[in-house]
Amino acid sequence: SIEAWEAEYRALQARKGVVRSQPQQDGGFFGKIGQAFTQVLEPKSDPIIMANLEASEAKKGPRQLDAPPVDGFRVVREYQHVKESFTQGVEWVHGEKVWYEGSGGPSFSHGTRIFKMDLETGKVLQYRSLPTRHFGEGITVLGNKLYQLTWRSNVGFVYDKDTLELLDDFHYDHEGWGLTNNGKELIMSDGSATLYFHDAETLKETRKMTVRYLAKRSGEMTPLRRLNDLQWVKGKVFSNIWEADRIAVINPDTGIVERFIDLKGMLDESDPWIQKWTRSDRCLNGIAYDEVEDRLFVTGKMWTKIYEIEVVEGAGDKEEMDKKALPKDYYNPAGSFDPLGMSR
Image (cartoon, rainbow, N blue to C red):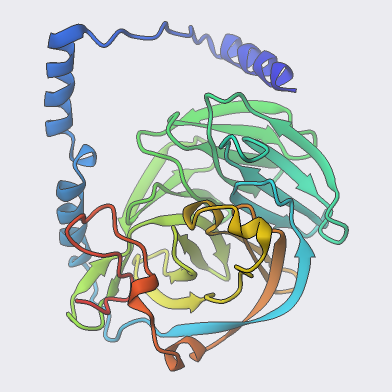
């Protein structure tokens, strides 16, 4: 129950000697002026400044010789998905043969949860709900711990992966979106073009990088924004791109996008359940990998299915890309969201 989670969280805060502060007032007229100055001085608060900073960072470091190739996919098998889940992160743990999932909390979903599911039957084996003040985001499993991000609470939670008991929390100074790990570090996204690396033991940020690719038309190195759910696959970071039907395959040493996987056409948009939701609320989001049997899984928010897929190299390059299907880039209000650089 949420009450049980709250009790564990209070006990955790007591152990750490944390005193929960009272909500601050806005300070009236002068307080609002102060907030305005803070926003001016903080680059992250201004999308235009942020876009320019990312564009500058993208041009630093090694240059990609060719634009990333675009792969296609073939569905190997379908599994049942919890359709009420506003999916924010998934993980497959082969040793347990259990699917782990973290969801966000819009009112039309089953709320912010972490849960374990039998992939073969679709049966939920165990779950925990969080209070509405925390909007759940990405998850990852490392060792005997499950890590969970929140969207705008600037706090992540650590659980015992077997019992889902709350063990610890940690903090970060940006939004929380996707989460994965490379065995030693937690890797986070925040909806921008940045990946953040945190030491898995201390939970402190150790480095960050701008994800970038060679745009086809401009020939310039360009930031890839809207990085969402993440998964570590064979030494690469696979990333969903919010509201786009594709996955970016990222080199974790350079930040360069080596390939895209185009998943357009996977979701059955004629399904009445899917038609109930906006494009954003039903977008592709969720990548899991079975490293033992070399199986790649994908799903999305409010989806009824989980798909095991095989990547077909180069298949996406053979199909004409429909620019109009790509969403507007909120970091660049004057332009359009164009991860493959087709309009540059």
